[in-house]
Amino acid sequence: MSLLINQNLLKHREVGTANLNNLCTIMHKLPAEGVYYGQVYAGRNPLGSFVLTYDKANPEAQAHIDLSAFDTFIQINLNKKPVDANAPYAVGQDGIVVFFISGAQKNLHATVTHNGKKVYDTRKLQKGDAAVFRLVNQGNYALTDEEGHRMTVTVKAAENNKYPDLRRQEAVNVTLTADGFSPSKEAINPLQILVVGLEVNASLNLTGAKEPL
Image (cartoon, rainbow, N blue to C red; front, top):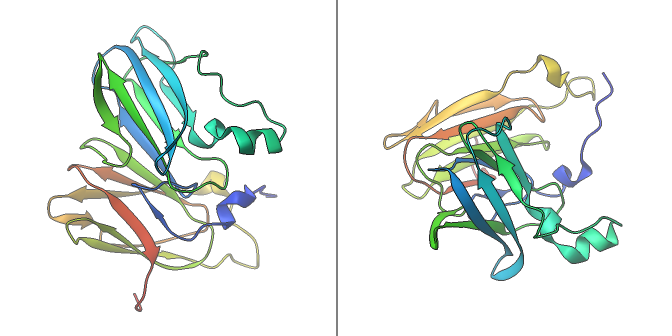
């Protein structure tokens, strides 16, 4: 299989859910139907805004929001059109919103308000969220939360200088509870999806391990 890789994935080796880059995607379930207003930031600097409508009658199962698309300067340099804040996103069914980054930016986050109240901030993951990691660079990593829980992740070397067929690879699922990560150690192939389901509020950090795993 010939696999095309987003070269931006090679730029980063570490990521935190409080300062997102393209190694991590956040999945969040909206609490109720209605109109939501979002703001996208790079650090403290606002990049843009969006409108998201949740109507269960809508057949769309997920709304995908690319935070890097709100970076007007980068989009212009790539000859792409920046996001139009007046072109709303829409989702139905269970109201799943996917926040991701396709570009090489780092330290991005989004906030969401509903009825004038901030109901979500990607820097502070909530119970029921999922953090989805996709790593390319082989090596050992440590995944931690602010409570000191830790799991080890090993990205295996590509076999024969080729990436495995992603169509035959299932996602690896991990659960974070008040007691920590389960399982506490995993080995994955390059680009294989690692999904961390949260049963508690948390902030996660993925770093290169400073000690053997």
